[in-house]
Length: 148
Image (cartoon, rainbow, N blue to C red):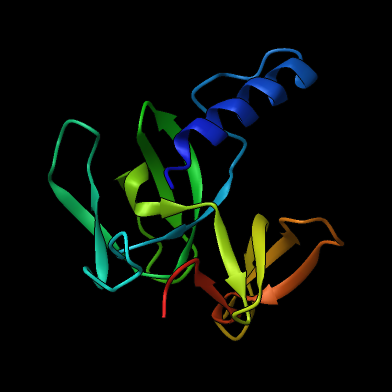
């Protein structure tokens, strides 16, 4: 499910609360990169990061299932930044990004924040979709909804 419409809503809400945030900067949201098809099967192990929404020059890549920070949004295109070294930044279509995952194969969760631990593992601050407390978990425990 594309994330751009949700990000646009969050940006608008944040702008109202903050007194006028720029509409093209979605408050540094966290999303999961997805190289999976509509059935959850791995189609592309890595997603290319483009120079811009209109320039398809590949400037890096992000692996399926990794977490990235959204830096900016232009329509259905998002400028993302990876957490792991080497840090990569580039544009990805929202079709290749997810805002919801499954924790340990059971609970659907949304992402609130992410950070890189000293040991190189990305931790994600999650909250259950059906409600509950926020908690930090290893990104390794999260899978795309429908992925095997």
